[in-house]
Amino acid sequence: MSFSLSNNESERTESPSESPVSSNPLRELLGWMKWFAFALALIVLMHQFVFHLSTVKGESMQPTLEEGEWLFINKTIRYAGTPPKRGDVVVIQEPPGSESMHPFLVKRVVALSGDEVHIRGGKLYVNGSEAQEAYTDSSIEDGRFEPYTVAEGHLFVLGDNRHLYASYDSRTFGAIPVTRVIGRAEWIVWPPQKWRSL
Image 1: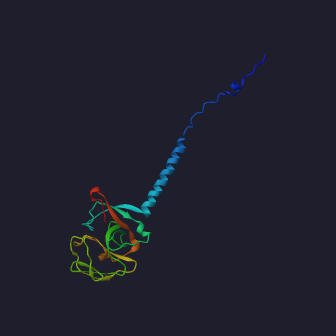
Image 2: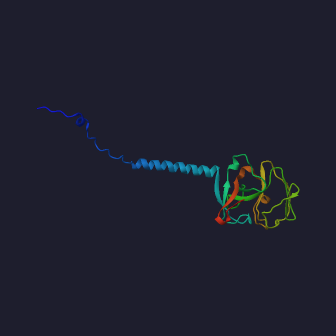
Image 3: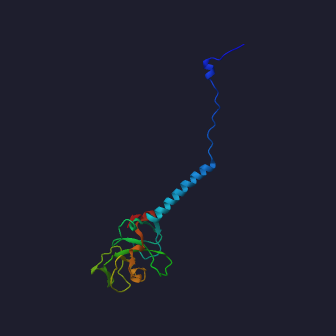
């Protein structure tokens, strides 16, 4: 006895059910670790070369800055060929030999390379003219500072707090090399009610 299947019947085949691809936990973990490492490297690069947040400590920049405020520091000025100018608030590396506990200082640039700085009668003079300093709230109480010419590639910096012994600045350690500038403080970002540009 012989029999045959019809064409329709011969084409009907049972395919094994396809099981969903099971995820490999180890491969998934490695993927997440790669993304985490990439994000961490990006954050480190941004912090090193672009910006960072810095907390104000001390009273040397009052009334402009108060202790505990957070500053947005633009670090690109070190690489973009835009050196600080008069009136900028900058973060600098503390000069060598300093006994302060803080490795960085926040100060105001008041004079540039080639400028002559002189303090008399509680006033700051730059190149013979009295500096207009709306950001201070007192005269300079630390006495007289004889005429001083800022060297090439250097900046003369002061704290905005001009009360007696209130600021450790260029009157003590002299002009600083531009290379010691970490960045320019551009915004107060914390607390929120103090948010403003500098």
